[in-house]
Image (cartoon, rainbow, N blue to C red):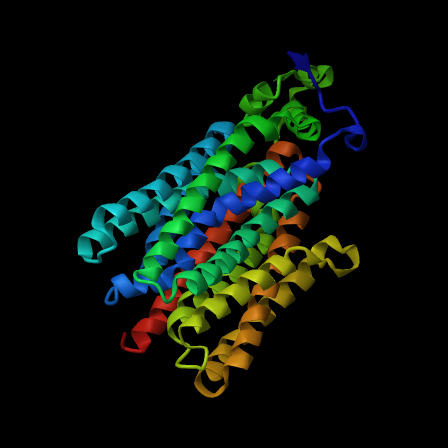
Length: 418
């Protein structure tokens, strides 16, 4: 096997655009199954009318995701990133298959037993998400910013893709017998295929790209132990630079606590972005929007607009003059988003569907834009192992924000008296 110390210039290495495409596809795979479960909420509302599935499934998912990412973040320096990500994508694949098996075994009937089964699968999706999202963001944090941007865009693309597919399946099957169920089965069959594709992409394509091997070798030369298996899969034998062997201090890195203290504003940014977003999306948009001329299409249109604008927002920072990198500017922009809370409340109460669609689009646009700005700015200036750790820490706060937002969404429901 060849040895690579990370000294070759990245500009001379091949595979940048292929790597960006693979990162985008892996990003889709990270949330494709979960977004599919959210997007077919009209089917679950139909077969579980008394259990508030759009909220309960999210509330089940989040503790598993948050608890798992907390454990993984604490131990990230000792964890084999390759096994972590392959386990995550593999779990997504198997859990998606289980959704299909459960639905076919019960013939699409509801009931508490079936609902508990769906909730268990939702929890498995949370565990898989924590493995993949933290693992990939950490891994890509010591590579080019375009890679992490592509992965984050893939996360949003999964939502836009599932929304588009849901609108198509609803139009195709709406007037047929058992149409909702047929659309849901088609959804998860496509999901299972795509998750298997992600397993193969990460296992056999991504680690063999020259530019990926370069950055992983560079991280290994700076003391990272998490990349060894991926380097071996790419045919690379890890070796320390001579100066690192003579001076072990070169391999020292900041602790997670030190990294968190230095980047506490970025961590709070991630928390607040998702506290706001998940206190509104998807529960409020699915159940608290009243009756409008779009009828059963209304919630689907709102969710589709959020997902499309979230995707667009994640590409805006590619235009350097539009990218917000000021730490103070990011905090002001993120705090300003909380004005959307009264805006949504009064629009739901007094406005029409046009205003609600506009607000939902803005919510998605700002969510995607600010997420990319924070996660591409924070890792700059650190060693590879530190960038990996910081990426995991920020995903921990992201998932913490989601959990807090979902909890606030439940408080809204309780305040309405169910």
